[in-house]
View (cartoon, one colour):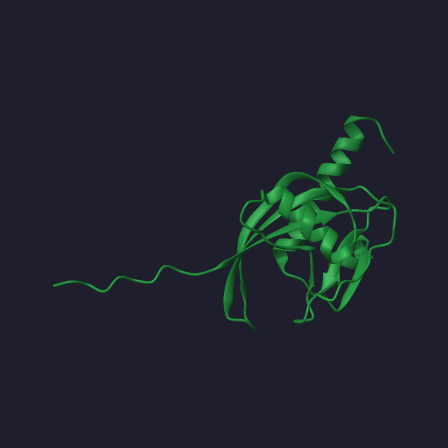
Length: 147
């Protein structure tokens, strides 16, 4: 007797970036589900995750970034789409002083302080990644005696 083979779970992979401007505000985008999210998206064949996040951030905001360390990874279930997404977040260093530009992919774009971010509708994993990157950048500044 042969048992039917189970279909392996299907999920998307999304590479996201936490980018803080010179004032310490985080770059966020509002999606069609009315959630604020980090810029980023699906990795393409032939690119590294670091290349993916830099490309996606530029496509979505016109900001050039240098990709830093991995901050976090988790599975996120999107109720509206009834699908799972594996999300990996990277800390990113902005390479621009221009205002971010909203692309056609999102409804709104903004730069938010830590206090403002706490009030936004967003997945907890993004909050955790933002907090991790803020802490890491503050630690680096303190270690190098920077303001």
